Image 1: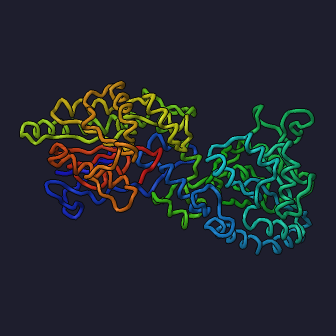
Image 2 (image 1 turned 90 degrees about the horizontal axis):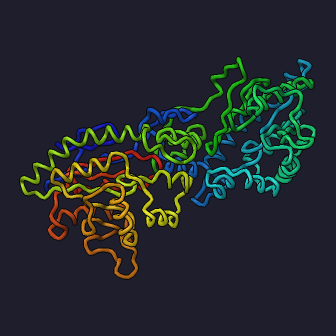
Image 3 (image 1 turned 30 degrees about the vertical axis):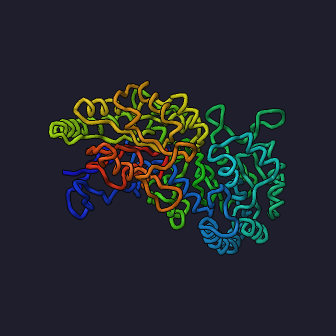
Length: 534
């Protein structure tokens, strides 16, 4: 029986409809990532979801880029995008309510006001967050952007804010930016067309230096005030000044929690998440992020999902960290974690069948072999990907890690390789690392306990320089071969007389592109939400 193993699950693939039979082999038609996810905003799902149940961070990035009309440069389209369309729809609906709500408030003798956050509520930070910071927030660099007044207006918001002021609402700003950034923020707001904001009605956070101290109207449970304490108690202060806050607008749930407003308006923003606990004794379950998502791996969901329907990238990072036992340093726990336990379980379930298959085929002189990818199949890249690269791949830095042989073994995989080898299977490596990295990769594998890999049976990709050229057994549709073309045709070569006439009884990889294309009896997908190579 042929089987596809994904994470903990074994999918029976013996039915003819699931396979495209080749000579003695099967071609799996269902090698594709998950598209439905349940994810808590605080990252706790990483303890239970399993690797395939965590939104892959590269797919999340692509989905966000689609949503903002970013062609891959980190720069949002300022003219048309799903984000601009969604903002226009939201704000058109809110604009239509302004006149009636103002009239109703005045009829009650109230002084109606609206409170607006700054970042991604009135000023748009996407280009800074993505093109400059690559989703890794840097406060010093943020201050450069603030002081230079670089931010464009958030789509549709200038007209909305100015319309509210023209109708008669008092407009307040309330931001987590600090007092040292207040003048520049007001300058930026004016520069992009907002007219109602003034120093007197724009609240920034104290620095604790000089005259910039915590105001008397804010009392917090600890020395460092939470966002909700700061913002909710500032709204209470505005109400104590005699205003009724008809509407409170923000892109973070923590902008809205804590009350002291008639209504709250959440604007979409999947590019970061700033959580904050509710005020003591206050429970606001409706002011909370989504937990269920549908997401295509290629990013196309960004065209239709809406901002709240895209997994927030900060929550994805926290979920991945929980899964790998990373306490926030970017370094995975090497002793115990949900990932290590999942890998151990997966390998333990594989070993009896693998050992028996290798043994029987060896006895029958079928020349059995298993094929193993390198990164996150035999060698574990988490610390490089996260602590060093912060989920932004750098090939030059990767080469430093490769040449220095820094990678630990992927959990439980030395055991699997040893059992397969002792049972009669030849170990064959097949990686996207290049020929210049082959010797170092073999050295790293030996260093962490693998004993069966040899240079003749370890396939690395050509560089196109000198003797490192595309082999004759690989033919690709274009000048640049895809991963699937390279790997599937190499496996076919391995099974040919020229490649050793092996029978590949199992093909192991952490990417679906490691597995697609046949020439293996069984495809085994190892969990990896830290990058996606289609």
